Image 1 (cartoon, one colour):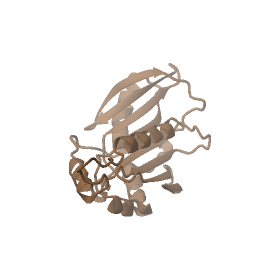
Image 2 (tube, helix red, strand yellow):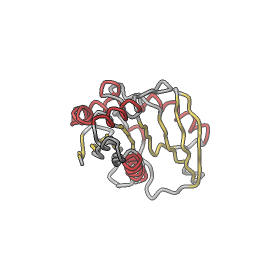
Image 3 (cartoon, rainbow, N blue to C red):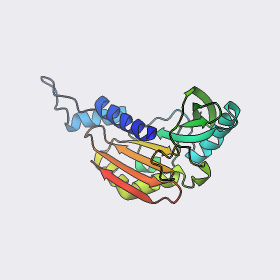
Image 4 (tube, rainbow, N blue to C red):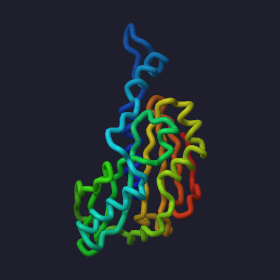
Length: 214
């Protein structure tokens, strides 16, 4: 549930921040080709760090989590790719990642970031989940495969049609739905038009559980 709420907040924030501009006196229309081209030029992806796939980054995060609390368990993972990244640039599934871990004995959670394969605890606080987290050993499908699935399920056509998009991915192992399933949520957002493509994918089997386009 926390991951889903986070994804919703990210979507709404991006739609608000990059909503089409209203026309000013003597200026071009907010959705004109001139404005779209100018905006696209501003958002070319310029990653400052070398990214890793989610599972590679998780190995580094797990070490930091175990140093924080020896009983730390994975709750979630998330990443957002640079705005304007094309389909071919997304294919390797590599990015900087944020992981949330839960320590049952201490009743606390920690957020661990992995940038350039270097993990660090960025925040922590008290937390008592309603359901025990799922065993992360059930997480079989890496971010690379999730990107490939998202692109084949309409993502590539979505990017080609919109031009400027943002990809956000979130992994949930908190079992909030009490279905015993670790899941991926992959969201493509088009800031100019406000369109979204969201896929819910089983992180164990890779099965597409739900597809929504708005």
